[in-house]
Amino acid sequence: MSSNATAAPRRQRHYIEASDVASAVAAMRDGARPIAGGTDLVVGARHGKAPLPDSLVGIHRIAALGAIDQLADGGLRLGALVSHATLQAHPTVVSGFTGVADASAIVGSHATRATGTVGGNVMNASPAMDTGAPLLCHNGVAVLVGPSGERRVALADLWVSPGRTCAAPDELLVAVELEPASSADGATSGSAYVRLQYRRQMEIAIVGAGAVVTLGPDGTVTQARISITALAPVIHRVPEAESAFVGSDGGFGAAKNAGSLAAAAARPISDVRGSAYYRSAMAAVITRRALLTAVRRARGEHVPVPASDTTFGS
Image (cartoon, rainbow, N blue to C red; front, top):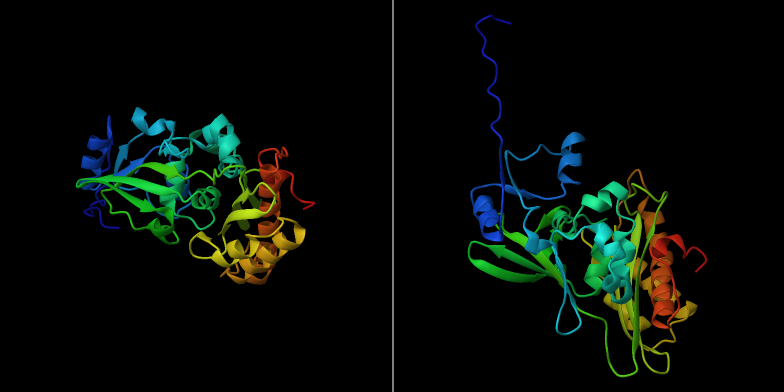
């Protein structure tokens, strides 16, 4: 190498800390990427998946984004900075949105759950994210704030492909709002999220399924919402399985049939963690387990969180 050669200039990196949503959005408008827990962004950079952005805006000190609030209709507003550990243990989540607690309880490791946020999970748009299916089963809506103000986007429309959302680069997710299950007179509801996993910590879903089930006074299923994880480019609901389960007794046969329809709606890939054939076969099993667990909870039975640890016999 010539002694006159000059070293390549070092990349200039910028970090600012936002004190409120407006300052965060202003930084994003200038090209900064938001960071809070950083459990995907930093780990991805360390593993060489993508370099850290040249400009970052920390949003972890925006207190308003860390709240969980009950909505007037019985729904729930989850601030973007709410951690998985908080969701796993929050009394309102555990009692009324139990599938969300199931999913939050198995995200990554204890350290990941303590620092990782629901907002980061949602905006990373992984088709294997654990929280996605139960959030979708509660008709989750993303609340985005950008330079032009606030807009609301259903999660079903937010996720467009693996790792991509329809949000503009200068829009910040501030909350996810969830609908409650049906509250008709005499009705009872339960929810669950179950995944196929090889280990309990630091695992990514090979197959996952979320379910919200409502039973009428006579025990008949009056409403069912079913979502599948790691079985398509984006997490999605399965209307065919939902329709088949509604009107049934919520028993094993009905759940098995709905599971088969969920498997038929899957578009899995083959990779080092499982073949497409295996994933399709397991989609039927995992969906059946999620439905039966949701029904048990709707009937008042106690199924501990996370459901994935206790459903292998169903």
